[in-house]
Length: 313
Image 1 (cartoon, rainbow, N blue to C red):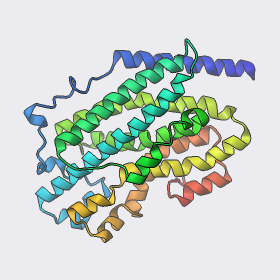
Image 2 (image 1 turned 60 degrees about the horizontal axis):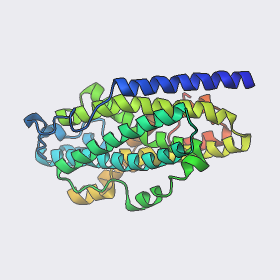
Image 3 (image 1 turned 120 degrees about the vertical axis):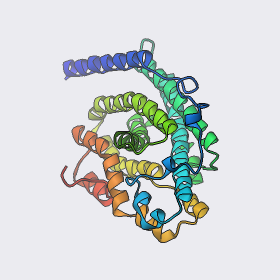
């Protein structure tokens, strides 16, 4: 077992050095690599390119399709701006936890170097997300107020319960990555400014997600059985909440655009399409849990009860 662990540790450090090198060789600056002031990147709230794609549950609803084009565009822009605001807020909390974790790392730690690369990149992401919100002119607030307040308490968990903290990291990173990749792949991100922001975020976020997966693959199997069991119960609700906050709009959007409550219920709050979108968005983490021993008869029922389990698994 000691030899096996040494091999795992060596492979882990090799991965971190590779990720650090990639961050040096390929990175972006939000105020030099995004042409904010180019005419083609100007934000017109009634630009039809903001209209929600069919992959968004509201985008295919008859109520939405019956609205004038300008209204549909304004709703779509508001939706994208709110996702960016949530992303900025989440990455703010993430950086605080990473700083706390890195503060205690020893000299010559490969984790220290990569974590600092990630914090710099996440800082850039927060800047470009907030810049998009500012230029959109939409008064979005992002996460619900109570969630923002509770989020202030997560920082110590990066030291007290690092495995749980990094699952929280994935709860914020995986859903938005899933949706942005899909939008870039099918051409749903039609405005060039949104396309550029998503392309940068997806490229750098791939490294961050890879690091979190490798961190958990190394650490979780070494935990005591009771700790692993407790963690297995905490992961499904964490993933559900993270995806829900990112992929479903707050009630403020319904009030602002006078969207009937029954339309929101039919599209986001409990709708089958919305549940399937969330389940797909957390599928990589669900597979990770299966690989590292966090799927057991009890935790499996929690995944199912939260409608984020795939019976093909």
